[in-house]
Image (tube, rainbow, N blue to C red; front, side, top):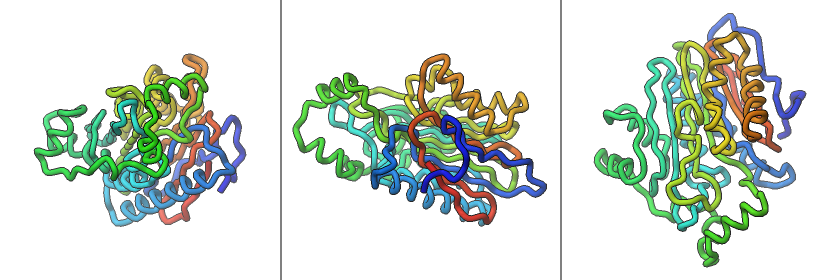
Length: 324
């Protein structure tokens, strides 16, 4: 459904006053990009966001942590064939699927990230295991895959990750390098890029998670903003939890998620902080993207400067609110 709130440059007025009682909050997004509101695809993306937000809400109501909630929500987003993560990831120029993910705990500021991994159905869960079962915070490519095998993390086949469009592209026999050049020349962008979630739990802790299948026909080994702490996501109990989406090469240059947290530390609400960070993205690097955030007081921020960004959120036992 279309956003029911007044929007200015797609900055959405979800900002609310401080709560007198702490209630859990979950916010999810399905990627900011050139979504076409007339297409069935955007409706499916919003529906996927609603399902993910509901899963996060149920987890928080059971007393699960914010970290549990964002992982559960993002796993469902990764399972959706219409979103650019997990099952909906894009083929790279070599006909492979390489995925990135990041999860961060706002209480401890521990994080786990993976990049350029193949044959992993739910990268966000592997990222969390990097955080809790390895001595490191960030593993990439073959090293991350070896870690997955060492701990018995389930692997999948390429076919498990291909949605109908990408399977057709692979079977067409097209030169993917030529296809990438055509995309660049036409300035075409994916309909949506990256998925993510942020949460506040009953214990007052924040968490953030972001996962992506990257850009269409990207060069093998390309890593965007999504797994980079402070760019693709950030969480700090002192300020806020943030997940970012958009064109990674621009987002990483301004450390956009950390900027939101810094603006919150300076006294801005989450909504104003997201808007301010997107203004910097546009003015400094002419970038496009979107942000979701929740602060330590449960206030929500949603903003984007693209055509649309499917998203959904809920607070406590409230019904799911969605928009794009």
